[in-house]
Length: 243
Image (cartoon, rainbow, N blue to C red):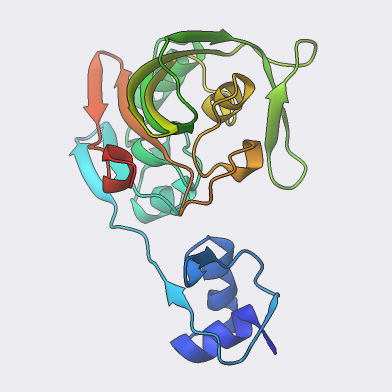
């Protein structure tokens, strides 16, 4: 037996640190099972499969703003570091794909941040959720986030901050539903928490109760409208159709 990250490093010809990073990011598989613990003991004959993220696509750029299509499994901060002179205006969870906005101009950044603060930014997401959802839902419930280690959010009417999500059903496939979700607020894990609360967690979102093992949490930031401009990211294959 050998620790997973050490065996992966040997097989891929990379450092132990890099191997551990790949596992921690959810990019390493044994068959159809994701390797979740880098220090887990595995048989020495184990064969790993590494699935690297797609390339970051620039959707639009000028002297003020850069809009990118963030692939799943890339941190928002990695993109900020890769684009010289750019500053994140918001963030997406690591497994969430879609539109991510960065400012290139300080004056524009201030206007944009103020628009986010005033809830003047419209955001539309697409997700596959557990169960059959056929009616529109408006979820107006406050969210409280605990940030000790890995962030976790929950509905909390005393400590929570206002959060409003509107859910529109698009398609049903077996016991899964494809939905559009619009939000004006941007609480940590807002859509994931709200959908889980109404009994329809996002497929693959084990943190909030999805029983389905998927390659990722099937959530995509499709469109953002900021200061009169709209930016849209095409749906990746795993969002366009559920298997």
